[in-house]
Length: 617
Image (tube, rainbow, N blue to C red; front, side, top):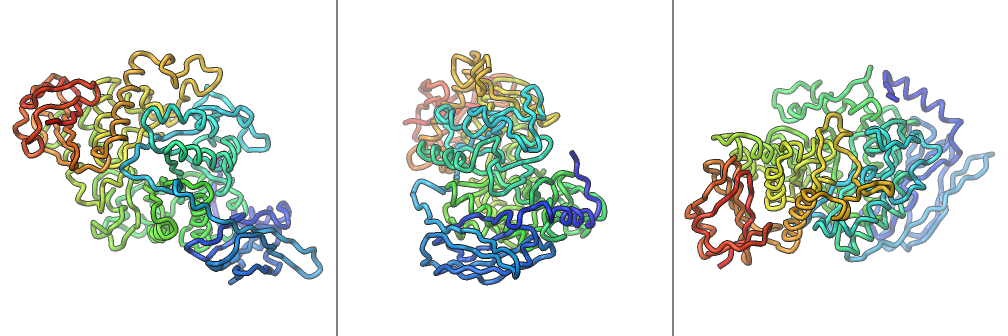
């Protein structure tokens, strides 16, 4: 169902129609909070039929009701609370009273914080991230495949548009597989409730900011996933959407005020042109359409200049960090957000959780375009965005050209070299996330024409270059297809469903080539996991010559030499040019084949192959 928004009146009619349908006290968000937070301020959203006509009171030592905010829609109150640092955990009553009406009350709880040392750790270049689309990974609980009362109750694994039944329990059931592969961090596409009538499986049209979609599990099960990962020495990244909500979100169906979302005389889509944000000659109208235009009919664009909107989003994100103990955020569609709010948001998250990290999707073309969004005001943007890192699309374009393009002055591997050479525009490029594919892009194995040597070369680059490597589920098993449409790159992981005839979670369920691919990733990922030289080691690269790109990762303990031959024929490389890094070394260990190389004077590199060599004396 497409929701076409034509005017402000449309939203007002929705609000009026809902008055009689909601309970007198429908919800309070966040439903509970914690004592001892860095920021003592808390804003509660109270939703109920004509709730604004009531007075509010509470009595709990250390908690002060600072202000009662009333907005256009009488179904809302926004309560500003202040919680002193010494407040004791406990419950207290918030009373909503009105003359000649029955008193309403809500029992609010302030919990003690969990200060365990193994939670909220942050994700860094020491990690290896594995991206999972939960609906398509594994079905661990068939009882939640269809949930009565939700907008979409279809279940059809033969359709790329319907839900398939994958869930959080399915991921928990396969943590050992991921650990064997060498994964240190899980990034799940959004798992919050998406009570949309169509294509709700992908998770990006959120309809409840504080609730895991029941078809994936429960809040408690999500927390269990995080806890189980932490027990295994793994981390969890939560995928966030700041820019819009699903059209079926309870707050969209009964807007607090007209300016909660960006209103247009007729439906207006974003131009998706990031250039207007930094173009010194851009028209104001172009900038407005880029940031205020809607992402799609069923994804209303929220107004991040509204203080209540800002508080609502920021507090929900802090709530999930504190509740589940997650380690990082991935920020969806970052470029379309209000930059001032996002900087404020970044400061708020960092102030509350100094170790916590986050990175953003910046799907743009051009190194300056990408660096524009990162923190440090490195390219004269005029303010600090507070954004540590981004999904490095420029490195993606670079590796694709290195593997598929023809060597030349500014093509082939030279494109990749130039991309990495431009890292000076970032405050710290090692905070960028490097990747070969994801849920929006064509599968990497298909991009390289199902050339197994190119595939291995790309994997070798991914796990040895600077930054935080991210692998899309199934890439380690040569899953393929082109993103036309997106659903084609969101296939089920074979073996994730009890009825599957093939189980690719087990070596016995994979073909010889699939096992070779899995073991190739496993070998490099675990080497990286156990050797800081590929995590935090310095990088030195050499100008490519004759289609061969050479770079080194090194620290005080180890030196690793990476040689990428992009040519269609084998090459013999004379290494004297690299004496600055090879001096003192006479031998090497080929990490992926575990074979010894007894002389470094010349090296034979097969066609379309990347060697990863640990240098030895």
